[in-house]
Image 1 (cartoon, rainbow, N blue to C red):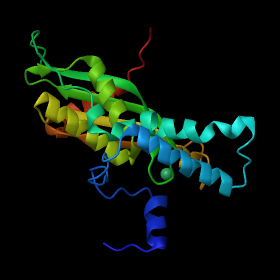
Image 2 (cartoon, rainbow, N blue to C red; image 1 turned 90 degrees about the horizontal axis):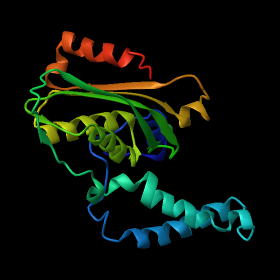
Image 3 (tube, rainbow, N blue to C red; image 1 turned 180 degrees about the vertical axis):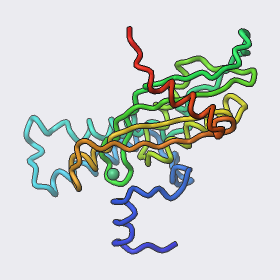
Length: 223
Ligand SMILES: [Zn+2]
């Protein structure tokens, strides 16, 4: 497909993702993290210089290196498959055959069209077919796929696909409710709106099962 700059701009502004796979090049990890940090540091320096900033100012001196480290090690650290949470599972000893829901998992991601934060909550559920995962595993999977340049729809699908693989069942669902700072703080500047995406696999395609999951999400947990 050939896109001119205008149609590429349109794809970005409309937040249209083009694939469920993160668009990575095959040589994405040909250089290591330290080499990436060194290169990105120069790029950030250039952006700030072009904008007219005085990089000899004490407040700005460390910014290029700080941003480069943050990109590679933190907010885009989930691009590297080597950092994927290990997929240890357990036998379902309790024979718990009902739905398990992990709700209100914090999502900090980054919109790949504007490189601005996506902040929200993910709610993940599965019905065990004999295998279970530790509860924190679901948080870690959400966190791993969030730490990429992302599109919310893709993030939702990637979380479900990974859990399907780990649990060996299609009975997995995920709902994400998130604010996109590219919508809230610029462009249309709608501070109130949030975006809800969902992916329902296997038994969750059934209306009753899906309703049960959505009802659990609505529970107001008190401590
Ligand atoms: Zn955006």
